[in-house]
Length: 250
Ligand SMILES: C[S@@+](CC[C@H](N)C(=O)[O-])C[C@H]1O[C@@H](n2cnc3c(N)ncnc32)[C@H](O)[C@@H]1O
Image (cartoon, rainbow, N blue to C red; front, side, top):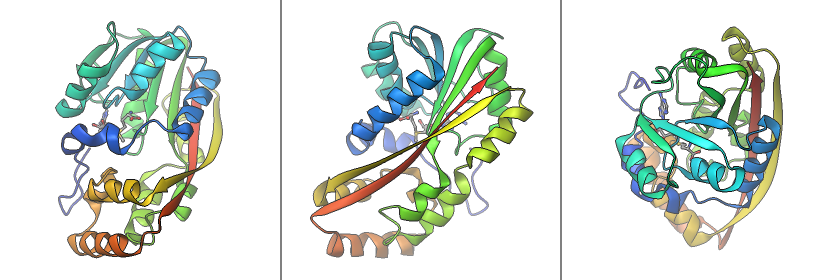
């Protein structure tokens, strides 16, 4: 991803070691997984997971959906974690969504989970289209921009909602960009859920800067928001999730 003019950019290498502890697969994660598998018909497919990170989704796709999975990610550290955890048979390569090291038409399915806000979408969607066989599908999992209106951290770090409403594309924008890349029909499904975090879990996420948006905040907001969260977070924190699954047909 291109750094902003002020030099701030998401840093996934630094997040890799604690990513799975701070962002574990929860009930909401599995709910979204089931929607993704059903809506994009992922069972048993030859599949590329773009921006595979630590391999959470790749692992679930092999173990629960019996897919034959490749994963790519530009972060060497995220890939190092993935290499230790994915089942045998998963192929991993260091690469970017915008320049995939695979032949035309090689995959039945491409997945992008929590990635479309980080990539050059026109280039990434064109590459997904290229590596998909005719009749293939691209399955996107992301957050709906509305997610950030009720985001549990916005009281402490108000810029997160502003930045992420801008970073995360709407269903309409995705549909337009997917059509420009050549995809035919697209379907969008909203997945709403509520989770509860214990205070210590919530604080661990803040202290561990669990989402990349923390890298885009200025130092004062980070310091003041963190101090206020330490003082004010209640024993139980309600987290509302507005996830979005979009499936595009090649
Ligand atoms: C929020 S994590 C999501 C990881 C994983 N897909 C998941 O759902 O847990 C975003 C991932 O996208 C990767 N990424 C960032 N820029 C990318 C790009 N241009 N192409 C492919 N992946 C990218 C990061 O390295 C990181 O591993």
